[in-house]
Length: 341
Ligand SMILES: Cc1cc2nc3c(=O)[nH]c(=O)nc-3n(C[C@H](O)[C@H](O)[C@H](O)COP(=O)(O)O)c2cc1C
Image (cartoon, rainbow, N blue to C red; front, side, top):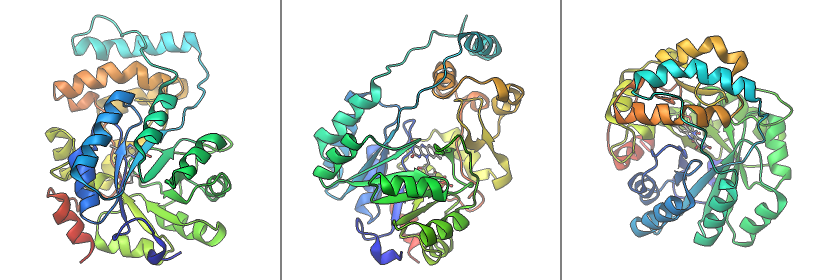
């Protein structure tokens, strides 16, 4: 595959979807207006907020953009394990003024409601992670000519996504910030992005989008030469003016080095790359006894939310890829210009 096969936008650059309030309408629209593909990270959004955000993006751009959702997984619910975890989390909650660990609050039907909004709003592109869509969901998108992208961490997952109808796969290298998207056979592959792109483009007949540690024009060029049709960039967009990242998070990213990141399970029950902090270090001892995603995600959500409101970065999930060291705080337009130099 070559860059010329990327069909959606002028630049072969996707702003990575980033759930958690980072992909503001301004960020998504600025990327799309600048010739890339903006993406709304909607995994945690209520259907109402998602609809409002899509409509706001449509007010700001007429160009294509994507919406991204998390494929629902079926966690093994182990109640004694949940109680043990609550005990471990209580001291952190107390430090932020809570008397106890709040009860789990979540909607098991969230994905279906979010997906209905996506279909109703008729977006140009849809991406997902943690598995694949059901055939009826894929057909519904195809009947609207939506461009569909799934996340793969191995050749096997890329082939699986191709067979299930994806128009392109995001090859998530080990350097990538955020959750690992691995979903097949209980495996947890950690392949560098360049190698994964080469392998998938050799073995699977599907356009490949490279993700993980990509920041500069040189990184972009290398991925296209390795066979990618486009790249997906997350962390570098977090420090753009238009992103929703808080100031203290941006500062840590800007002064961070690749070795400051690690794979962390304690925040959500699913391995994710982020900046190491007090919570990630202290929670490591429980790695073999963390409730499955998304149970742990819901157990720690009020803690992380309060920590964010009070600027306490030691209790926040600070997702970050390994492309630290050359990030620059600037507008999306200026950042995109550096990629095409
Ligand atoms: C803060 C953050 C949140 C993310 N959330 C999502 C998400 O909701 N869905 C998804 O498919 N990928 C998510 N990712 C992955 C990005 O879309 C992208 O693939 C990744 O950041 C690329 O690696 P990089 O950060 O090294 O550029 C997230 C990444 C970060 C840094």
